[in-house]
Amino acid sequence: MKLLNWYFRIPLIYLNLGAFVIGCAGGLLLYWLGGILGEDFLSTATNILAPFGNILVNMLKMIVMPIIFCTIICGAASLPLKTFGKMGLGVCVWYFFTSLFAAVFGCIISVLFNPSLSVAPEKMVDESLMSRAGEMAEKAATTSGSKAFLDVIYSLFSNPFEALANGQFLPVIVFAILFGLAARMVLDLASEKDDLRTVQQINSMLDLFEAFQKTIFKIVDWVLKYFPVGVFALTAFCFAKFGVALFQSYLQVAGCVICGILLMILVCYPLFIAIICRENPYPILWKLREPILTAFVTRSSAATLPVSLKTAEEKLHVRKELSGFTLSLGSTVNMDGVCIHLPVFAVLASNLFLGGEMTMTQILLMVLGVVFASVGAGGIPGGSVFLLFLVLAGFNLTEAQTAVIVALALGINPLLDMFETACNVAGDNVGTYVVGKKMNMVNND
Image (cartoon, rainbow, N blue to C red):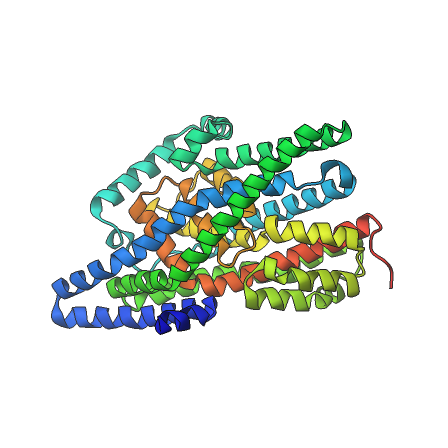
């Protein structure tokens, strides 16, 4: 018990980083011993490690759909459609625009860096799975572009319960958005007509979804406690099989993500401010240093919210009624860093298992999936890992192939999550300032 109490008291980021470092060292040691003691020893060692990593992958797959479903319904239903009117619409349009821009920007950066592995993909999964991947790539290449595009559109409006059961993310996201907005409209109309019974019914239903969301987040807390064990097992497994050659891949992926995020913060956001507000953007960005650094350290948009609110009021001079709405909403639905981060692993998966050929349909699915599902990150540390399954779903990968990409992502997620959360919070604050300036809700110094 004392050991468990000590373990739970250590901040999660240190546990994950420690697990990654120990996993690297342990995996390299096994790789070296395998060269001395033979393949049988190495096979036995990796077979022992594999279940601990697979458990974490399965845990993530178990909770990702409920997280997205509940978070999007609660977020959409909380939008004050009539109370805020133009302001609420402006904020939502801004967040959608920046998320879409970040997703497309992430795709461009990923294609330019073209991340891959320094080990052959056929060594990472068995021959039969690689054969199936080749068949999928060939099928994708021969599919009509217009027919594939129509299939994507049709799939958005599928049976949501069937989609839930089959793990199809986009139909669930579309249904959740429509359901949440419809609930809010019914609630607003009932309030106008003093229909107290309907108001009570809708509020009770939304309270149920909110309670369900909080319960799911408690399960997320439990999964996060297991994270270091899974990170250690997956990292040790990968390095035991491939040795030091894997470091090149980690550096390439990390460099791609970090470069994209730094460009978003230091170039794209200032450009938005300069074009829309017509002022020097860098003094504004300098005023945002405290919430950005806080987000970098805590890896949580939600935990940074008090600092962002204080900065918006005291340094940006944004009125409280705007900053309270935009920053609270942004901490949940605006995940620009996630939108840059995830396409990198999508391109990596394409390079590994589909011959590097991505169809327009797959790119469209990736962009739409990243934009809409980024809402489901929920401001929790490491939220992007849960959404990685959604992005990979558009490539029809096997479970073994998905596990390879997830294992790589988990290994460097603590580092990348710090940068992407800083980008998320920077986007929230920049959006608050830009919308405030356009709506004359920023008090002049």
